[in-house]
Amino acid sequence: MNELIRIEERNGEQLVSARELHEFLEVKTEFKIWIARIIEKYNFIENKDFVRVYQKCNTLGGEQEKVDYLLKISTAKEVAMVSNTPKGKEAREYFIKCEEAWNSPDMILARANQIQSKMLESYKDKVIILEEKIEQDKPKVIFAEAVEASKTSILIGELAKLLKQNGHDIGQKRLFSWLRENGYLIKRQGTDYNMPTQKSMDLGLFEIKETAITHSDGHITVNKTPKVTGKGQIYFINKFKAAA
Image (cartoon, one colour):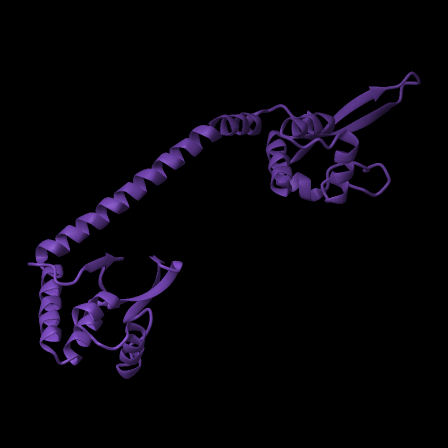
């Protein structure tokens, strides 16, 4: 089939340049007046029956922008028909043949295969990105799993050093203060000062190490020290990372 008027394909639709159709129909009226009249008279709706596009073109006065209207093929067919001219009839019959070819089983299958290929390529790209991300995160995951599974709890001062290694230079003194202010350590003065709150213990973030001290006069006191569990170490690293 000879191409009378160029058919453009966008997003699975056939579109026709209104300017090219205007030229083919040999309309004497200026394009912008003709297209405005056609749109108004036949109640064509933008983004449903046509889309407006802007093109750069060189003129004697320099580069200028001109507007075109890409008509859906059904709209172009109607415009051709209402022109009521031999050229209009020829254009309409041409558009009908283009529609028939577009909706033939072979063309439908070809478009389906094209869509499938694009989806497959997109899927492959996403898999590659995901695999790269997993590879990048592997050392962090191994570290996190090792720490969380570890039976070794650490002092809060050591947690401050661990946070520094992860980009958060807070220091032991400020970390104690932050833990108190955020409800992880008891802030009221007394025997329980700087001990884990019930919330911290329920979350499994801390444990309390008790050390019995025998004094010279024979009496024994118990010294309590809060220690951060493996789970707590990961928890606070992630907490500071999220707040950064």
